[in-house]
Image (tube, rainbow, N blue to C red; front, side):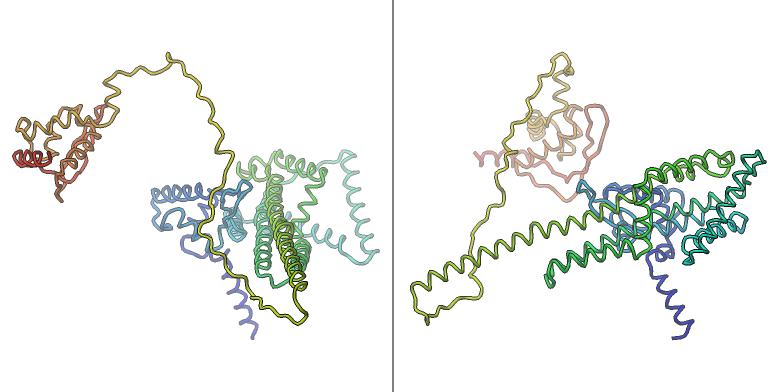
Length: 498
């Protein structure tokens, strides 16, 4: 394969990653905006139902702003598509509730967009100085030549001593320029914004290891000890052989050292209190720098929780599954040995007996599905007596207005309509002729109940029932038309029933 073909294959592989598939799609700005608004910078897990609602609300606001190229479907459908794209992951929190969180691919895309949204750093003295100091420090820590490393340390000590003596002697302090501070804050924010995706990458690797361990246990094609040894080796390699694992170990070591954490907080506070920082940093950037330690702690907690889930899986398998199965096997073998000794004591040495390889099935008609729960027999809490003076005062008319249909009055109106005392051709016309107290929405059900009791038939045509609520508001209902029967036929039917 030629060099250009190999390079094309590598580029195609990069474009196939979920990070670039997210950024390459047509609706990427909308998706990135919703992710940033919902999860923020800390990627705090969100309950599934809440995220579904948030997605629908954000899309409604964007649609009202005039943008029409939006994802379609309900919030649940959209989140499931994002899960298939490997931008969202669904898991269980400590309370056992389902939550969504961003994958490392989605966080990397957010980080890239965030960096592009900032003012791009250009070639400057700060950047060159940073490169020189990083290379110098890297060389002083990694140089294999002992004398060379000592020389580098002596040079650094001499340089720092000269600077200290100059300041002690009262020399003029060189103030940092605004460009220098801007470059420094930009690089610092870029480093901090990369932390969540790094932690998510380690968390996802532990989740993958947990899935593979469960699959190996279920397959039972390898001994349990071999599976556990493989997990320990992979976990150790993850912490030492990968860039994300080494970053995790470094952050964990940082948080174990109270002095380093205190120094980090003090340095960040000093930078935020610098006179030039107020004109360079916005409130969002200041909040991001101020929450650096919390960001690292939250990331570590999520990684440790995922690692604990892997450990819990191993413990559950070793303590319960293997032990229970081994005990059952041991009891079965002891019973077989006991029955064999009994049989040998009453038969000859050449006696044979046919034994089926598999036991016969036991036919059970019914198995209990529910068992006694003592919590079901606990008495409810006693009802506290309320003060009668605090009860609201309601008249009889107000109580009746909130009750069900007045069947007695409605039955009398139906009899009047059949006797031509209240002219009407259908239930809807009869309802329109009633007084407001009998035209509540619930009275419609009363009329339909009485009509069904008398076996009156409805038509396919709809008619309107203009109901009046007790508060005076009106609402119209569409009900299948029920014509009133001929009074003579109705009387004949009543006599036949008797």
